Image (spheres, rainbow, N blue to C red):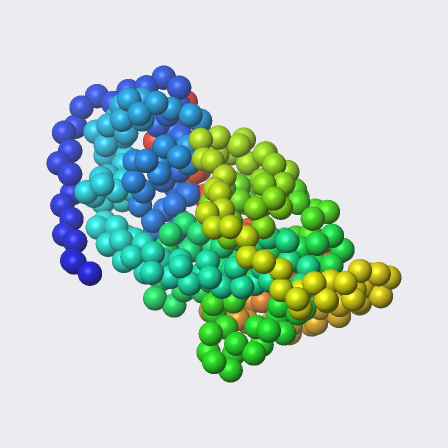
Length: 324
């Protein structure tokens, strides 16, 4: 990969004025969110993630005001709250790795869709945002048939145990499960809005359309960011998937699903009580219910939201004119 050299754009100080509708504040909010992950943005990305729709001309004017005031910095085509070039270089390398990894993620996602009771698969996490570090996992979002989440999850995680033998377990991180009776997320905040809007559907087009429709509230946070669409046709149902679903489409299936939920929840409670940690050193955590199960290592969501709120508070103190 070619080395990219950066030069800080020359800044000409002048009297800065708010453009009138809080566009500067909206830009700062977006940059603050991605600054948590040290991820500078392109102008088109800023526009997509704003909390209000703006024209290109209005965005350009607001960005120039922030640049002139040295509240925002431009490094080549990237915008950031800092003048440091390293995050931009890191981002380019991460984007390059992600482009190479995404075809594998889509192939694996289509394979996982063939498991019993799975109704939709999407790529989530940093890879869905086209970024991968040197030790990147592939995170998957899974929607299952109603009242069969725990059978589906158990089968998929038994398979994942096998992948430890070949050292490929980091390609099969099924971190978030919902079933079709619980498509609307209970947590409605900027974190979950970003995760839903950047989710990359792989298989289960109709179910994903229903999921996005059930979470239209995300437009309150990211009105200019559209849901993404599945690109490839559905893989066919395997005979094994058909057989297992037929075998457990009865009261025995209801009993087994409830039993597996209780066993898994109990096991994870013990892990949390014993302070067990994952390979990244974060305390293990699983949020569970009859119709959902999602991993939250080290209370990641809560920490990100807390960090973001603190950044916004600091920006408002440092740059009050943009938040009036």
